[in-house]
Image (cartoon, rainbow, N blue to C red; front, side, top):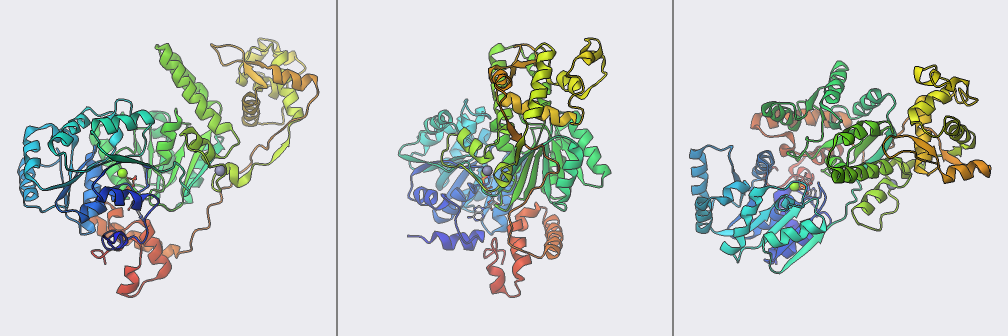
Length: 575
Ligand code: ADP
Ligand code: MG
Ligand code: ZN
């Protein structure tokens, strides 16, 4: 029997396994196939990297993105593990060279791009090699049902036929039942076991805040993190550029990332982010697939995402190293209009309905006062999480206050204007606006005109959103976003009921977990030193040491080799 824990410390510098890691490794080492579904940051790489050290021969790793391969190979090399990669970024001469060395048994791990596996040359080469195992990273790429189908992954089909004795491990962060079935079938798993870890991530602190003064709020949030890595997701290219400019004017190092940039430009932003040259990337959804940066401390959604799946994936890019990280969604019911416009352009009715449903789910998530983690885990079919301690809802159990009067005013305004207007118009009437739309309809002559002057537009919009969520107001038309008083609303008025609604927030307060103390100044000095070492070695900073290691150094002040060896992330080679 092998001592997995000892190997973990020796080669990777970690003292303990994350949940499920040990079980998967034991199973895989025994020579059986495994399918692993584990959230981003769960520590999937270790599941094939550690077994690779135990087995005779070479483990082949298939991975879809060149940048990911490179980071992993760099990280393994820094830990003293022999690894290399074969993909289109390497010139012919060097490829040849590496293939030759591989046959001599020089590598424990070889990362290969999936398209290469289709070539007969590569198949012949593999047959000559002593193989230990095959690892298929991002295994959902094999399935048409997945959100990122890659035809090249179909090349993996032949692997089992050609090498029936070699165990296979498939890893993914997101796989529905259908995708799991596809993976098992395509890879022709024989006896295998599926390991699914939960979707709950206890180091992610979630909040949803209102979108008023969005830029200022974003700035405040970023400044809390003193130059550490931040990703901000926006709706459009234009929005990313404007926000990035705003942040640059405030003296922050930020860059943009969207589909309108040239591939080189995108690569450049990604590279600078990974190398800690820019701290903030303002991006459209496209950003993040190609990076495994472990120390992203903050992810902000300036506009709410189009699906819960996408949202989960994007927030998952925060805190992969397991340290506290914050994810904040800025929410305004008005944002839905932007998306509605998008939906209206869609010709395929079937698709439009399905996208509308997805957006509604995100709206529900944002406006419901239930634990965010409960909502997310339930959404993905996991039960048992009912309250966390690190989402805004659980943290504050937002104070409720009597909202009977304002509710009466809003409902009256909806009725008096004829049950046929959108939220914006109702709010104008309530606030006593002299807007053309109001005057031309003589709505300034109604008794409800100006009866809620003391409220801000934003607050009134929020109140209306709450009333919609409660079913007091319902859609008046399928075509337009107009509202009428629903059954529950009518009952409320007729029976003179009372109602409590969440207090409108004034300032957002986010209380982080009390983390173990460390010397912040020393941490910053170490970050600077890490960057220098990384630049000299042409690797990303986290390859040198992760934040977990730097914080431990800034907490324990190791002064001897023994003490330094106890720092997490310090294995034999780095020591
Ligand atoms: P995934 O592929 O599941 O998204 P990674 O393999 O990239 O996750 O690992 C995420 C981070 O967790 C990495 O920084 C990795 O070094 C770290 N990590 C993995 N296993 C452990 C462990 N047992 N203890 C501490 N850190 C770990
Ligand atoms: Mg991974
Ligand atoms: Zn919660």
